[in-house]
Image 1 (tube, rainbow, N blue to C red):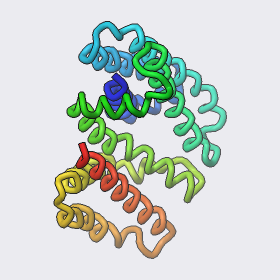
Image 2: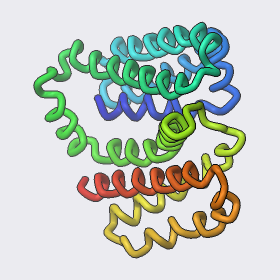
Image 3: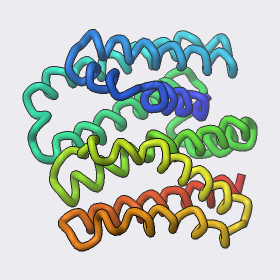
Length: 236
């Protein structure tokens, strides 16, 4: 169930959160409720596919997601323009969401704190398709969001400039997906074929100016995430 709930979170909180909804969610409680309702629906659906009797805990996860996101609205209005607020909010927000999922698994008797890692490992073997799907979803929108927020926060001390990085959303996801697949299947020589063209084609735009460090960090970060997840997928 933990793998299914993590997958539901990644799908609902990232894949099914388009740009306009992300802005609305951060600015108004109604937007947070709409976004949270999508997460709730996906969570209930995925839980039902694994164990229909687990729906009360899935409902709890979804409703808590709404409450957490709604609680950020006031803080966003006050601090959104301040330095590393975006990165701090992302890390705290995701820690809370993932903590609720783990807490629900423990409270429902599905696992115990001591057996958590073993339960996850067992689920990977029992629900291998779900685990693989989680890996591929993770390297799409979630990886893109985390890479941008972390690097912009650490290097620029600001939130990402989505007017600039938005064009990499789908291209980067496809690139990471292909690299992860090649790594997982042992075709390491094909990784440069996917990774290098964008660097070569786009380098004239960014090299030799103030964006060089950030661009290289984004490219290397994306490559590292894809290779790491590819190695994990290859062991499943």
